[in-house]
Image (tube, rainbow over all chains, first blue to last red; front, side, top):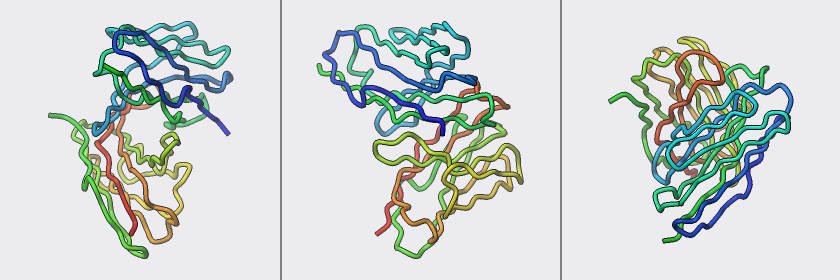
Length: 113
Length: 114
């Protein structure tokens, strides 16, 4: 059974501080790793899709790294702002899963002003 | 505007009733998905459809049914056979094939069984 773990489950961060959290996934048979942001009362929105070991992606103050050999990805937020408050989801696809993503339970980030 | 719509936003069902959740997309995407979210868990796949008139069961299909008569529409029926249907339901679509393509989500339907 494929399993994707995200930690921590929730995180309170002071506005202006930087933070990071983790997505762990199976290290064999890797195909792609997705990060999504899900704000309350909105639809989940894609942040990054990562496919290569060592990939680093960046969008504004948010960046992500990927280590497929050890099975983890980090999401970093630099200088947190209140609008960063959301649940961050990661999803993994392996080579054998046709169209299916395996989702983590998410990290809920709350930025304190 | 292109996007995915789901209706209703909130739905209440009595035990023993079937209910249908609507999902419509105007993104011209081939594949559509239904997920269920429960507190503390990741999204779990109920059904997905890659093309019109074809669909496959996901991990938790028991007690659910779908149809894909049109490319734009992928309704989900929650039947009375679903033992614990109270949950948040998300519909998504994706262009083309492959797990490296972004999924686009609707706003969700919260179903409560009374």
